[in-house]
View 1 (cartoon, rainbow, N blue to C red):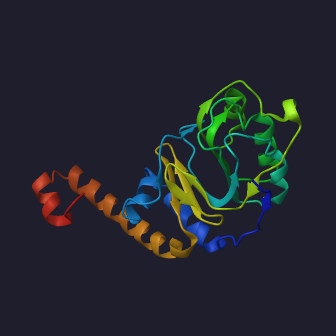
View 2 (view 1 turned 90 degrees about the vertical axis):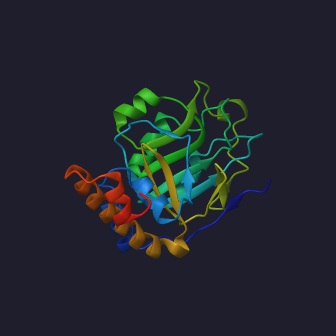
Length: 224
């Protein structure tokens, strides 16, 4: 596998701000997936802190499952506001993220990390209050201590996690429910629909609180 370093076009700050408004509601990732008609959902990843909910531009890193390397050097390509996604293809025998990676990301103003594989130092990452989603944990550090290599790695290429394709520059919304991915090409339209879904759910909750029956809700809103 060849080493690849690509740049990408990041979403506008205005668009990201629109998605951040959704974070104030319950289950923002669910609102976004509903707005995409159930597309873009990545499950099975747990947050270090369940209260964390974030929005960011996907900065993707593809690591070969049979030859994992230390990906810390790729951080020099990231920018403030990026959300780093490590596609480790579910590899669980080596931790590809830890407390040092977290501290560097905080200094670089990275909004969050998503690791489709194992991490370590979860207790310290919890205290650092950095938003991180991960597949599992293992005490074993990255392979740098064994072979001192940081290549090959593919930066800002399409990656696949839980059968969902994530392109660099896609908008990512993550919370305790999981991760929602929005293609950059449709992000503006999805944002409109997500706000509509958010407003609908506010009304539905009020109807339920005022005593509306299931039949009433179905008649007014259709499928809930």
